[in-house]
Amino acid sequence: MYSKTTRMITITVQPIYLPNQSCPDKNRFVWAYQVLIENNSNETVQLRSRFWRITDGFGQIQEVSGPGVLGVQPVLPPGGKYEYTSGTPLPTPSGIMTGTYQMETETGERFDVAIPAFSLDSPHQPISLH
Image 1 (tube, rainbow, N blue to C red):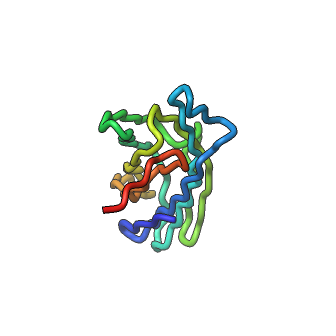
Image 2: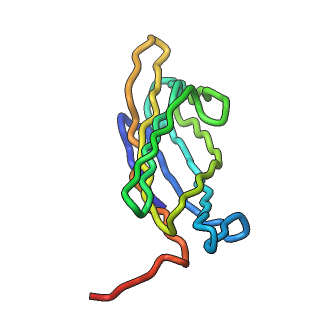
């Protein structure tokens, strides 16, 4: 698991390789990632938008942004949590994801919360010992 806290908002991510949706012979590797957003602050916040940077094993970068997550903009009161699962395919057996969520307070202040960088590793990734 990977975790990072910004302004008392903690983002925890657990990537999961999906062998049943992957096809290594056709360079298709698929992961799910479970995200837990915890509001440990004393103010209510709403997740307004997301930004992801996905880097495959070749160093190719794909950026994804848009409103909310999975079509919703969850409101998290103090102590509130929100969980969701999404996924991504890659043409390589490994990669890295990172990003930010933009949050908004009840007073209209917007701020970015860092999503921790996390690795996408499949069992098809060659391992070399040095």
